[in-house]
Image (cartoon, rainbow, N blue to C red):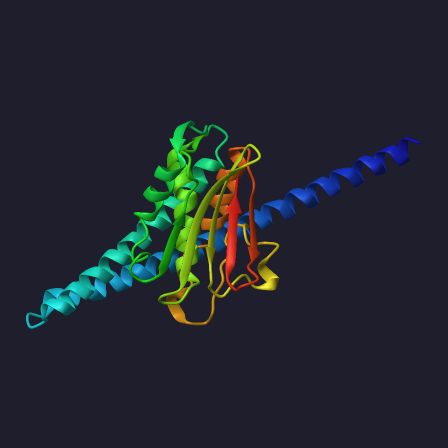
Length: 248
């Protein structure tokens, strides 16, 4: 009995050590992937900014139209960098045990319009619609984080729709819940990504260079924020084509 108990204890210790080792290896792998992704995604916009700024500085004969286009590209790349930083910082906060959501009464219309104001080109380069309920709807949320959710969803729709593509953000009140959805007529969600679309570091690349942007934190943050508010978020392909992300 003593020998049997000793062997059992030793076996359990070995299993525990093996599990801890495997968990540590997974954490290290995740950390390595994150750092590699961050390095790549910061390098891309920085290279663009440096190149455009260099052309503006060295070329005195550029006409006003070209200068305006280069300045616009620098602005877009800068916003891209800022969004990357915001997503990284927000995910770090959400994973902290000391983090607390600061809820206040917010008007849904205001949250949506605030998010839209941060998406460059959504009204000029897309067929964009906003559908709001006729009555004023107020929700108890962390306004800054909820705007970030909407920004990420709208930014995601911009990435996966073509020029003049259709994007719609809609809010409705139904059975005691406020639902917000972002729909588009883009390339939709691949079958092999449907079950992991909200996981960290998941991105979709179509093989066309910089169309894949971000380190795959945007949708993960959306889920984390919505869940922290006691709600839920869903993603599916539309019958008409494209994707729909909706949450309550």
